[in-house]
Image 1 (tube, rainbow, N blue to C red):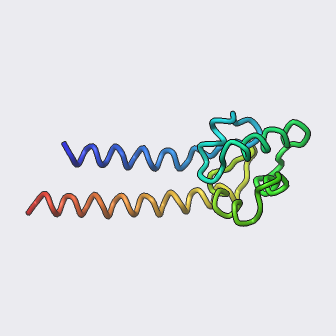
Image 2 (cartoon, rainbow, N blue to C red):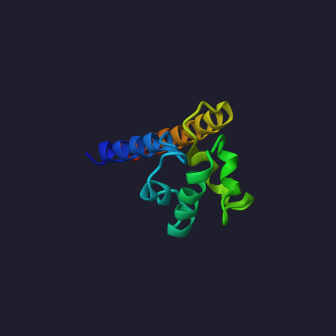
Image 3 (cartoon, rainbow, N blue to C red):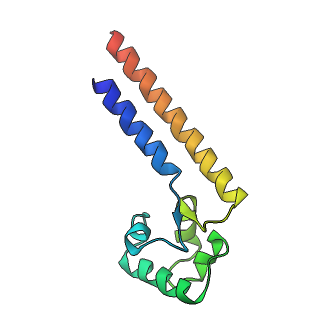
Length: 115
């Protein structure tokens, strides 16, 4: 029972990894779900996109309060709704790392259960 809960939680974590936030269409709440984006930055993103379209995720650095440091922390969680092979590659790499971690935890739990 405990193992299945851990596996379910792990699968949920991986599924959210693929749920990049579309900065061209996201609600304020969706933007605020990104770690490092609070209310004022979410408002700034919404104001920016009223005039400009985000053509790529790097465009978010044009929003006041979002510089290189913030961008580096959140870039894996962003999407513009268009196909971006670099972003997809980053997400795939993060997903593989997360799956490896989950598999290691699962094996560790199985080993503990056998003892």
